[in-house]
Image 1 (cartoon, one colour):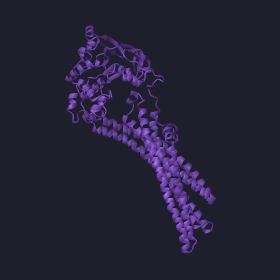
Image 2 (cartoon, helix red, strand yellow):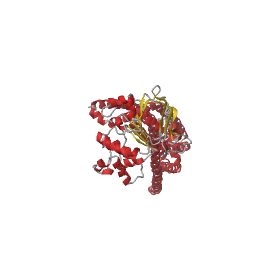
Image 3 (cartoon, one colour):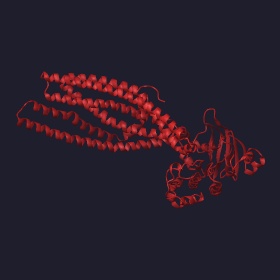
Image 4 (tube, one colour):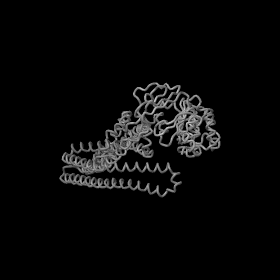
Length: 593
């Protein structure tokens, strides 16, 4: 939640620090389009009105037709030259603007995407995916808005108003003085409205992000909504969110309409006074009819420009407001930080040690305290226990999706916090309970474990994972798109693709987190054969509820409340008649109840 009512309350400096590197990268091109646009504006809005003044003055003198015709034609040629020059310089400005703006938008989009990847697993579990996408898109869109407004309103407006003020100062100093005072009053008024409207824009942006998040959350759970006949409930829930958004948006828009009304009245007063003043001077014979026309053209230009500036400031503040939400994300300190001087990753044998580790998801929710465990190189270890005992947490800590608050986790004697995260994870093949697949082809999803794999290698691991048979039955076989998160595949099929991906990665350490939980008994039988081959000569950690999954492990560790209560082989633990034996007796269909 943002606080404060100042237009700077969202931190303009915080926002610009993410935009400025991209602006500096293209500063030469930016400078060129500012110059070309500037020349075009001076020609069209400052110089061209003098041509009209000249024509009116010639007509007003009542000269004979040949004299008037000759002079008017000169002005016509000047007008043609002005129009041609304006269009040439303006199009040159367009060329350079579009050339760099398109690249800057790409660079900013890439930068935001890269920054999001620096955040930890926990960050993404605590944030709506849809909201993050919406904030990212608004951050990029805000830059385009700010750039366009800076060029077409602030730069154009500054040149027009500055040029007109100089001309008036040289020809009509009293009117120029009044114009300067009026501009100061107008600026103060705009600042007042912006100051009051900023909190309304912040509220609107926040509600918009919430609606996007709810929308995304509902669509990603559509199967549950249908299964629980919850369509009406979810529609009402969504309507509540959109009602809050609509209310926030309406408040911002209503205030904006009041702002525009006051602006229009002030601008109308300027035009009426300006015309009255110049007409009185003409009646006294102090200025020509052409000067009256010149002032009228300038006043019309000022009227449009200043009203546009008011709208422009509003749009810029709204853009900054939109960008500020993403800046909060970009400013957030990642939970998992790379060490400044990472060690060379020397994982080979795969000895894993947890040494007196401490970990809690939240304050007061301690999972591990002084927890220690060792897995020998090539050893296959199963982890079992009730839900919430800490089994999956062990896997996530090993992969450094989260960091321990005390103690150390080592692989082959190296503290995993001293390695680059990518180096660490490149040595671990991971298959989770809910394998996430990309909306890409089956071939691409399998090859994700090794992008350089050949077609033959991809097919070979698919056969090992018992996935080849169902793949060949799909419409495009290995080129079949799997849908968002693999929605076109069954749970078992998704799991087999994930296992094929892990086989292809061929890492020295294997982590299976409920990797066979979605498989039917027949599929599990085939997969077990593939997993036996996969585990050979690899240090393996298997988290399981289904005890049949760990029955053949070298060692089974039973965890309760973050503490190892038993350790041994399947036969040894059954003989002890302890917790594992109770699980074995209680299991139904191979699961711990």
